[in-house]
Image 1 (tube, rainbow, N blue to C red):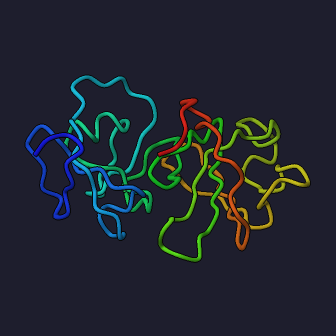
Image 2 (tube, rainbow, N blue to C red):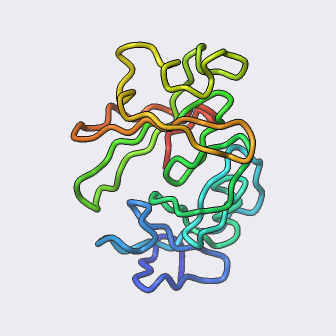
Image 3 (cartoon, rainbow, N blue to C red):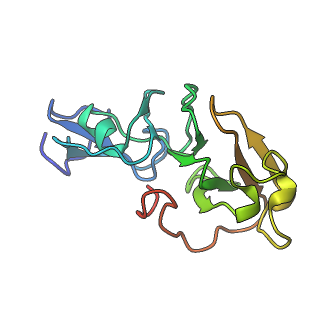
Length: 176
């Protein structure tokens, strides 16, 4: 197959991977497209592959022939990073904001947001969701996550739409 060729059964050439939009690993209605595997990668932020493995970044996953999973599902802890959909948030600098979808497509939205100063390492209330200032979206559904290192936060929004997607707090790139 060649780049941008549909891959309804996930089959692509040896130098390609099957990319699905949205990133549901072939579980949605959309047929994936074969895309070329990346040759060289510079680590940015860990990601969760459709095979349940954690990769140093999306480039490394694609170079291995694996697409990213918006549904997450990687159980391997990454010290100081919290799972946030297909990506991980650096728990030292950001938290995962989750907007629940009531339908499978489009999937739930996950965004890494910058931590308020009171929630960063060394703050007295670090493990308490009370470190988020009043008015923080979704703070009423806040929880902490163990990472194997510094714990992180996830805030879940129910019954509201995600705001405009902003670049990933760690990489500066849009999620996805």
